Image 1 (cartoon, rainbow, N blue to C red):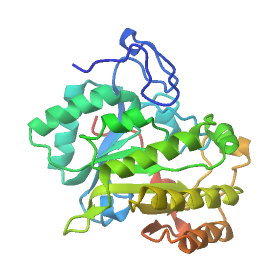
Image 2: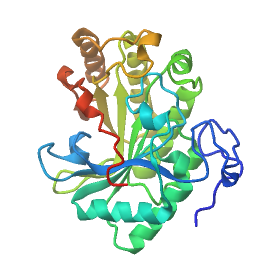
Image 3: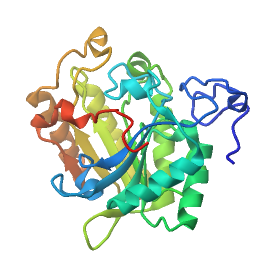
Length: 305
């Protein structure tokens, strides 16, 4: 059985919720594990999900709840509105093994930190039963160093966002003024933990860090500041990583209320790409502008749960 937090500090919110007593934290998570979807996903970076037309993919598990409160979240139904199904760590273990049986190239845990005790317990059980796939930790980047360290023996690949350089922008759009500081410290720890990217002979990533940055309409200057900081981190830590620059922003949820009611322009995204190239952040991925499509948001119909 997982040991539930009695004073939860799993994320930087450190809200102190007594989860063992069923109290709900800022993230929306209480005392029972909740999952919204488990399926092969074909729209991650190519080194994770491969050819989108292939029958395999990344074995994604979408967890309910989130420590951030992003006003533009494309997964808001599960991150902020509680959509999901109650399960236990035994069922989660079965889900991991089922995804492996279906041909998943990895186990991709999407926004899992609020359920850390259940996740680690399920991974331990699944490994004893033959799980051998790399584990991808798909996170918004808002993590504590302690949580990253606690996952050292469980996570092979960190797929982390670095959303903002500006505390004011982070406060406005994600209700987390401390986001830049938290994401910065967490990323440095992730890099020290995994080392440089390691690829298999099949081209799939087996170990390392991918840093995602979603360019937001009207906020190119903050994107440029993020890229400058990523270049500094690469120099300071001395560990290379893959950069994934995303143009897929689509105005979901409350985006329009925060002057985010449009998609990013080609000119804006080109400025971000040009800056990344100038800074030498060329190992990784960039998106075509046509990537801003709603198909990148899977249907949260409790598939596989």
